[in-house]
View 1: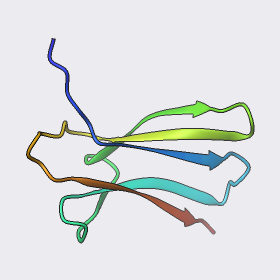
View 2: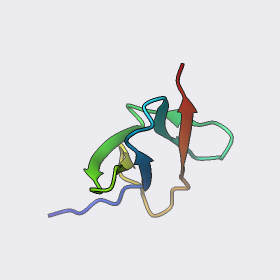
View 3: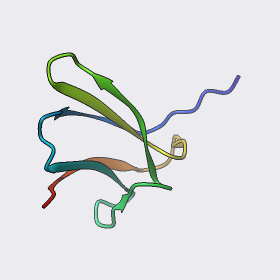
Length: 79
């Protein structure tokens, strides 16, 4: 089969922090950022068993060897 490479980011979050929203952004130039679908997907969330979980976001499309892509976390408080 064909294996694809995706840009990924892991973010650990405190499950008790219910006033925080976590997402990830994708950019090709570090100036313009795209958030959420269709650019990024939450690949998985895993409980760490200590009151935290680890979120793994990945690019929705595979990256190519000559592409230049960046990924970052966005953490916002919610009212």
